[in-house]
Image 1 (cartoon, helix red, strand yellow):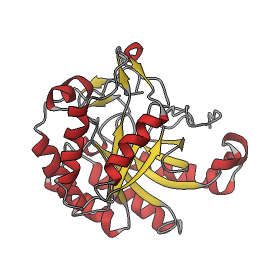
Image 2 (tube, rainbow, N blue to C red):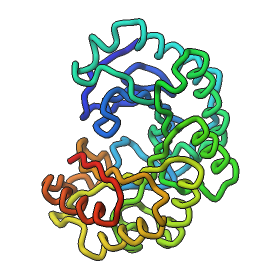
Image 3 (cartoon, rainbow, N blue to C red):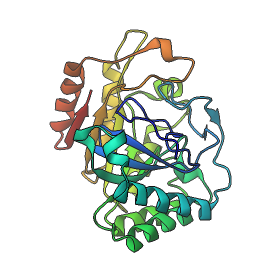
Image 4 (cartoon, rainbow, N blue to C red):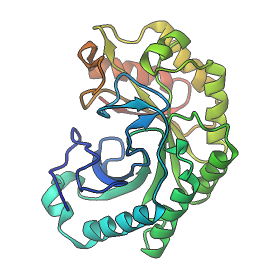
Length: 281
């Protein structure tokens, strides 16, 4: 295996030389997250200006080699559980596996084989005795929730005590066009978020940063609060986070981290609605 030292600022998908499986040290998960990348072609149906994926293109995932995915996952789990990966590649404080997460270089639910890939990972966890010991997560922009196969897969995830992290950034509709590269009615976001949360425990993940030196404005914050309010208490909570790694998009020079105090102030406004909030500046 080609291995490099990992930390919260190093999320290379090539760190172990595999096509679909990669490890990261995750701030929000609190340890090592084993990623499943169903978009090795760097294609996504959104184009977020803070995205850390190099050479990002608009599009969907290629055909997935499910046999290779299973072989890579079994090989890497054996290395983590029985080899010296943790000792030689991971900071002491993070030397624990927290989850297996469908994330990667694009929207994972856009892959036609996403339901089958989820079944592969679920089977490997059961056969290795890790089912129930590791959290199985999906990190998604929620754009495919109108597809029955995706909703059914999320329901399967929920039955396996899994979890979804659903992207909703602060912003009005116009701001989302600039930040996420999509034109979505907020009502559509709320509807898909509810569909997700009804099937599986769901956290909203919200990225906050300054653009051209300016943080999200009051209208952007209110737009986020309105979407959260329309879930009617169905979501588990909100992961509020800042920029830990540099964007690989052309807008990168225009982006900057926000002070921890700004994030905490927004977190408090969200908590006042009754939701749990975690903050990762």
